[in-house]
Amino acid sequence: MQTLGRPNGQILALCGARRAAIRQTVDVIPGSAPTKGKLLVATPPLDDPNFDRTVIFVLEHHDEGALGVVINRPTEEDLGEPLDRWEDLQASPQQVFAGGPVETDALIALALANAPVVEPTDDLSPVSGRVASADLTADPAFVAGRISAVRVFRGYAGWGPGQLEGEIMAGAWLVFDAEPDDVFAPQPGDLWRTVLRRQGGRLGWLANAPDDLSAN
Image (cartoon, rainbow, N blue to C red; front, side):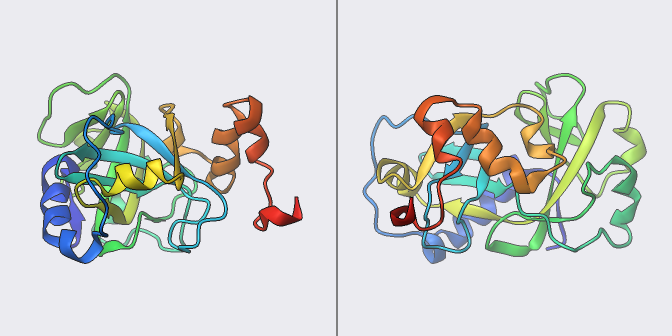
């Protein structure tokens, strides 16, 4: 699969198809608050190098599982033809981001709309507030007047039923509200620390935590 235009539907189908491969044995936690539209910030140190010090924007979260993209890992990959026509709308840095270890042959595009997206259209589908999924097969000229930025991700992170809830309860992730510009941050390498610092207090202090916590 080369492109995904509608994460709300197509990505969920992928998540279901891959659930057996990515699911761990974690009990379902009833009543856990969904995290769609929020940020998952990895707590240090996280043994899995796929997610160490990552910030994930959650695209879907319900009884069937959860799905999101890592938003602070740009790669050296540029958009090739025919997707290079989206380059003028790409947020800086204009590289494809490593969205996660699942379905790395799939590209997911998120757009920052000028106003909250409530209803899906042929080229944009709402995710949360002004963040929408963009159909990369569409002509970018048709959406250029409605959005201010686009970011493209290769692959995604997926969790089976109850898995993300279990990881949050175990302390692997901190859950924070997302600001509209987080997904399109111009300095994504600083985003992990930036999100923690703006929480203030002890969470703000965590932004300066070393990889080896015993050294602090």
